[in-house]
Image (cartoon, rainbow, N blue to C red):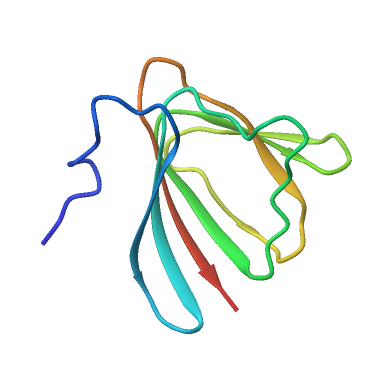
Length: 104
């Protein structure tokens, strides 16, 4: 057994993305952010749908076209494949914990 809130490094210069489980059609990840954002000019444009739930912290997503979505603990969504998006920011000074499921 493992815990989603344990094993978080004290020093986190980059966002931490860990594969927790998966198969040919599904990948489950834990993401830890601490004030991190997607680098300027970079967009995620994935070939799979992505279920995202924010477990702790806060985050702001930006969508291609300029719309923004703010996430707080418990918020979840499905991002359709090829829907361009980026993380504009996450909570400063605290861990933002995401659980994502990429699926076809």
